[in-house]
Length: 236
Image (cartoon, rainbow, N blue to C red; front, side, top):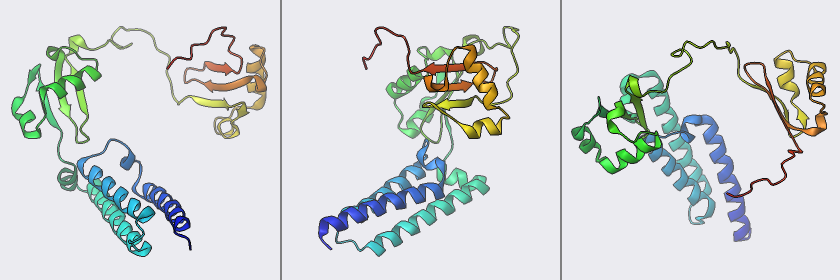
């Protein structure tokens, strides 16, 4: 087999193997990663990359190494799921870096975490004054979680004693790209007749609608192909 054909086949096989392993390992491998997830992802990527284009590596050896690594990661995930000590060993513990408006320098030094980076992450959380923070915690994924002091938190509807309508479900997509989503109608006991009547109230036909969704509060959002905007903004 010509070498470029073999590289193409190995690359396709690598993608398929990656997709299969992602299904096996679950969504946590593509979410915010812990230290072990990070190490595992790099190792998986290195093996697959060698499988794709390193012709000196035998295919069955690369697949064997990949299979062993996926098995190890899967077993560690099972251990972490069933054992608090296992979770703590592989993922570590969250670390408090701000308590009652005071920066905990000792905890930051242990993580080699700088005040500049702390300020950057605080700004990403819309916090520009450290005195507003009750607790700031570095999670095992490296993300910063912030709990503001009560006087600096945004008020909720409950705080303002405002009447709210109860919501018991997620929004339901009715039409996407001009096509009615039949499964969503069936699962929520909605009929084509009801949908057609809602469109007729707005003097629309199904072919006119790009996207339609039934919100949790019962209102319907509809976006049509014709937006009637004379000068749409297209700047990035």
